[in-house]
Length: 239
Ligand SMILES: C[S@@+](CC[C@H](N)C(=O)[O-])C[C@H]1O[C@@H](n2cnc3c(N)ncnc32)[C@H](O)[C@@H]1O
Image 1 (spheres, helix red, strand yellow):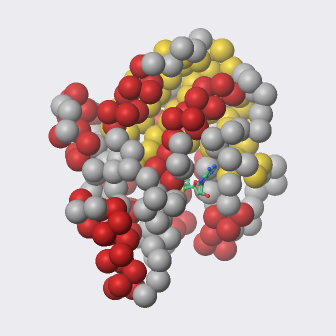
Image 2 (spheres, rainbow, N blue to C red):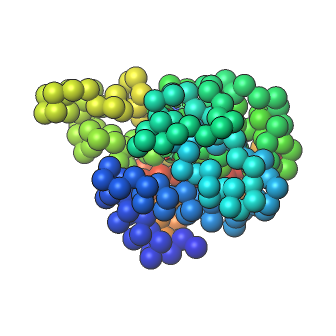
Image 3 (tube, rainbow, N blue to C red):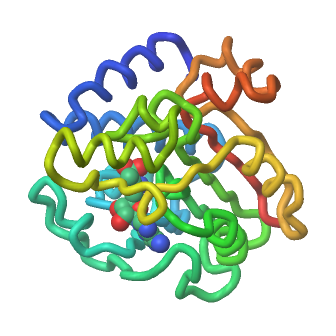
């Protein structure tokens, strides 16, 4: 599954995120669901997607037989790229999920943790709303990775504030992902600490989400892993 060919396809399609979002997000969604199918039986599973955005993941999860509930905090994001918000979308904050404890079989979040002020409160909430025996998949972009600064990269390596100022000067407007407001520095070390300290969940795996499995060993190297991994997936099973 995590082959070089797959990594190359993800990277190639990443180049067309702005020009051809349907292709990029379609690839991402089917890749994510294939990854989830290696971890859990999705047939009949109730999936919560925290920060689902414009809903590209719905078709892929539903094609795998899952019942898909997206939650997002921003109505504008739901309608990005001309998309129509999905029926049943819940407006809410991932850091205070409006669901009862143990409501979902799979609680999923992709590329949201770096956009919230309290990513580990969001993680705790994801564990809370997952049923005993269910899975939590929490994946986010690492600050010290090449895409940590998002559209302000690579200047985030100097400093997040500087990167935002530089972007503003060059483009004449604020970056969409604004350091300290909608973009925060999150590390792999923080994620590992959070995952291992969960009182109500066991760690199933912690993997570089996009890398081929022959490079998974890099995630055991402190510092190096923060730069090479790009995006980490914390996978937990609720006790
Ligand atoms: C980069 S997009 C990721 C969308 C999709 N999950 C993906 O992987 O492409 C980040 C999403 O997180 C949402 N978001 C930001 N803060 C949030 C919060 N506090 N609670 C829920 N969603 C949030 C944004 O509105 C946006 O849709």
